[in-house]
Length: 217
Image 1 (cartoon, rainbow, N blue to C red):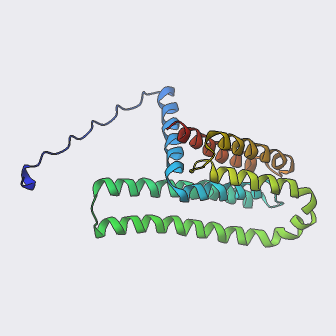
Image 2 (cartoon, one colour):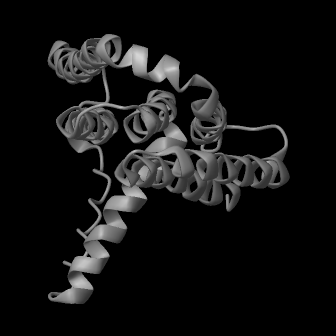
Image 3 (spheres, rainbow, N blue to C red):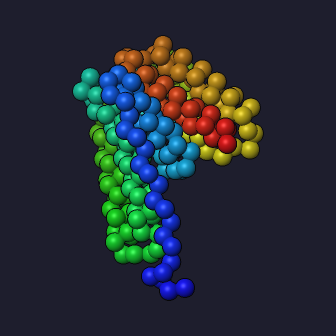
């Protein structure tokens, strides 16, 4: 059949707009959270950023650094996963608009990935600028900070592994989630500021919710 005579697939109707007021705002937050969780299930890079974000948030919580440095690190903890989620959304939109190979689609995807790379590289440079001046004080408190560091490593491993494919199913996911949550306890005790602990807990909660959604399939 000629291409001009082929029947087009029906375009699905757009979803109805969310209700106004508090219910609409709550629904918007719910949709945003769901989008992050679903992206964590499908995007390995976002899972890596979740794990690294927990480590960065833990450092911001427990390290003897200035409030400005702590705020910068926590902002980067939020921005890098957000950029990765936006990159995944753009890739999905490009694939939908241009199913075949095209130079424009390639450029769009590469540019979005480059933006994430630039932000991630800037985050690493910011960390390397903050760490050396703080290292003597960190080393002096090494014994006291050791439990928090071990807990942060466990929480980071849980955040990175929970949304992905695991051979042990729900049982292993439950153990990972419990271990990650337990790892936040010594971090909270050693924290100079609890905003970092809260950020690590939020990333872990996102990973755990992604694991729950993955287990429902």
